[in-house]
Length: 334
Image (cartoon, rainbow, N blue to C red):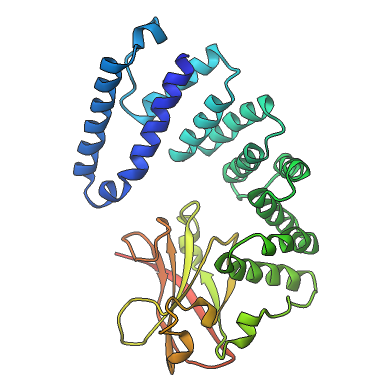
């Protein structure tokens, strides 16, 4: 029961940190005050409504921070190590603090207890890649992903990660075979991004690109951008960051006319913008005689620029059916 109580507190801390993230980022003192207030309130409500003495005879003090909760949860799992969700939550908490090796090890303990749970296997494999200095999926991670797909062939996350792993290993044709079934499972926006990654893998394997879909074939514009990352920024690349390739009206408002969002496995990457990427049916990419292109790395996953994001200098191109541009992400947003 103690594990359940501590795990619940860790989960509450993770949720609170996520909810308060915008406030924490823009107003750290206010964010810290709100988090502390919510923690105190949670503790008081639990003391008044719950029965902490009945649940935990040692009457331990409730953790007041994520780090303290991790320490308590670790101690409880040492006493009662057969708690799958306890290990899983501990792994996520370690990852939230950037302690990827500890996250990997906690996931490994969870997998020992539940070796046939596809979602857990995919999470554990991802944790192993994050803990690797080169962000590579090792043989153990690949075995986990293959086992997950044996149990649940439609598991999207396991299939995506396994494709990445095989492409990392130079098995581009195998990555294509793993990824292509995902096209029938994902939404149109995700499918467009996935098609680009599949076509890159097909090119590596000496295969022809996928046949165009009606949406891409009907587009009167195709703007292909090659996006590179300055090596000086590579070591500072935020884990799990998103890359946005944005097309907007030159000299106009900063609101994009079309945008692609990716989570690439490496650079350089190639992105093709068409009318299918337009945000509004009344303001299509093909309506612009000229297009201003920009690439941005966003740690928050939000297309709106924030201090600390990486971005390229804007490049203006003439719009048309076959347009190409090169974007170098080499500056930090102030």
